[in-house]
Image 1 (tube, rainbow over the protein chains, first blue to last red):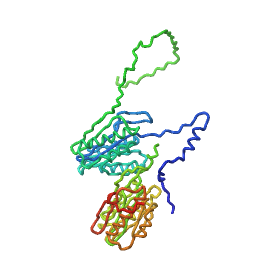
Image 2: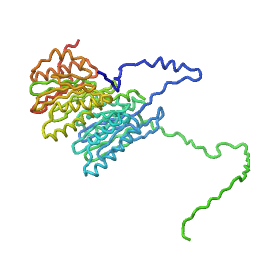
Image 3: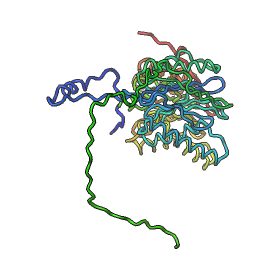
Image 4: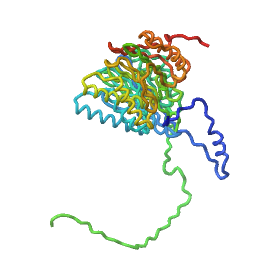
Length: 280
Length: 212
């Protein structure tokens, strides 16, 4: 029986297959040592929790480009519908575009049918699209919302798999965040408890993961409406510029001044008539 | 690229289904992994396809969820056209058609089980590659390798519903103890003419075996 597997099952434990190759490459040519490529971090911690009256979503606000923080106040909690919000981890462009498209589709649906969108519908649309693209769209999303059937929290993976659970964390900082959530989550929490839990989970992600950082955004969704708290907690490392870095004219003393006149020679002249329309 | 990004969510899992006179008992563990991280420790791998037909999913979570959705739609449409309850064999054939046609792109091992008025309780297995065969008892997933001996020696034809439930729970527990990719809770479902009864056996309530 011929079996062909598209995915090779992952081997657990350390894999030293490439270390000899890397040593050879690095010590190789005399002209320039070939450096091993740096891993590219996505850098996010996002989390969500279902509580008594609705859903609380949280996210950090750092966007990284290699080791530089590209955006200190990036918004990772995206609007999908008045009662549905989505946190995105993974490739920033993919999460932005996917959530935008989802939001447009749901708005059109709302107008066509006269109904408010349901969270399960948003999840199904996302699942369809991500499965169709076979994992090429690097979007790890946490969708949360409140609709006529209740409060729901889903995660959608880049290959199109969904999980419906009462508490979640995604992104590179998900391991520390999940630790906090597993420890302190209870069913039917009240609002302050839920906000503190999500905020502490994101904070754990920020402290333990290099790719997450800066401020914490929260989004509380209930039947009555949405409270988008941006930022909920600001980073204590708020670097304010210590001095002004602009130099006044005259700061540098001028020692000598020489003026060279440029002699310009008219080589070629063209005149183009404008066509002015009008009856005259 | 971080290698973990390339790993899809897998349900390497342990799944099982047993026929008894009057219905079927189905069971599954509840672990979904992304590499070495357990993405969901309370997954429900027993998916309803129709009122009295369920499937146990193993393999790639995304692939099996998509296949199950497609077959649910096809079977529902077929049932409305015929104006009667669909046969379990029909559901299994639909799974087989999809798994065989797209065998190169999919990674899905499915056990289809249920009750229909014509043939009673039936279990069909559709492993990776797209074969379909009916078996009185079937196990699947990465943890199944550890319990073939147990199942072969402990299965007797004509067991009662309670005996089947105990048999399934014990087999799954043994597999979960030995297979790293299976774990969490044991989810059971009994499908018969009366309908579907679902149970969950939590980690601390699982049957205990000798800890050697």
